[in-house]
Length: 186
Image 1 (cartoon, helix red, strand yellow):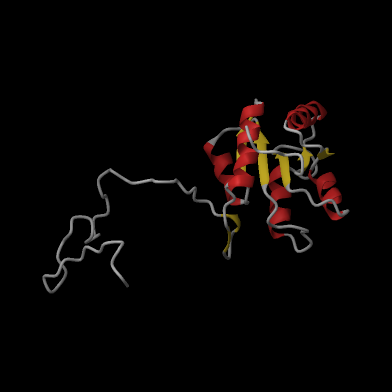
Image 2 (spheres, helix red, strand yellow):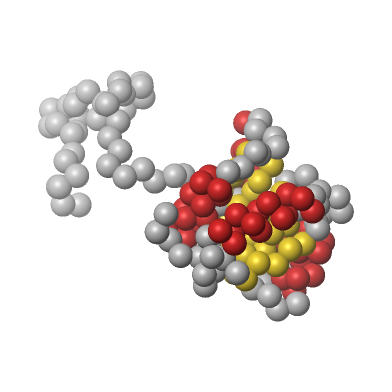
């Protein structure tokens, strides 16, 4: 674990005081000293609007008043958001696929399921610092690119597109090959 967190500021948002202490203790192990806490999303917004601009926000999903999903939505798309590009790590006890997709679709950068360990929290913090994803804006979404980039990924399976002439190297209308190499110009 070579990444130093001593110059990283983090806002931890959770309605459970004990969970906030666990996360803060883990962050202290990694030398992260600039950690502020909020008991729910409404308190987090007050802290963010008071001038504290953290490098990372770690939030629980389920909280009273303003939950983690609504907090992320306000950070990403709110007209008064101080930093819509703020990396957000969601921690939750719910691992249903629909929840993961919902978190992704509001712009969550990383998703952790409780119970968490120091290693997994560090891995997710490391991801947002060392491998940040570009942000995408569309009519219905603003947040980190939802596609994960895989280094050296090559697909070895069958091509399943029925009408893709490149799938089997079919010839074009004039009998010319429609195959195109990535090294070809144009």
